Length: 177
Picture 1: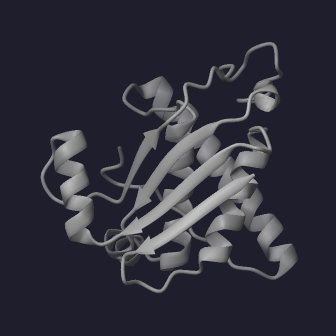
Picture 2 (picture 1 turned 120 degrees about the vertical axis):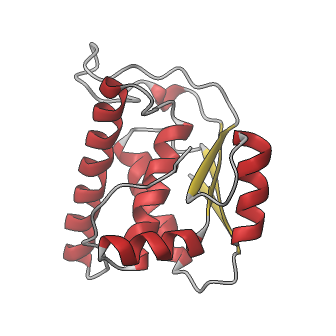
């Protein structure tokens, strides 16, 4: 699995830990091991520009997802035992780009009462789920996406605690795309 991280935000972020989380999420969702993912960390002016250009909304947001390849993933609760992406092991591809603004994440983390690293984990997971076709516009979609997001973050925290790395934040991204 190829996970590229470019930090153009000016904020010191543990890029190795973020890449490890992304790998965990993709592994848990059984995404092909040769798939490629790009994580881009940008500052507020860059995120504002992307948010206006692609979403038509003013101001910066926390995370944006730009899918590249059309992946046909089974929906939760299908014959694959509810495992989203259970049959994706056959087709590698470029998943796309997850763009995160650490400055917005820091504000959200302070409001939620947890660490920036935990908010970055949440936003990274949220963005990856968007790349894989999840959305939260409708109540049922919201429940499915955030339920899976919570399960992925919980399994990451359990594994991280066992391995001595970080993770015990909670919350939901605000203004996500």
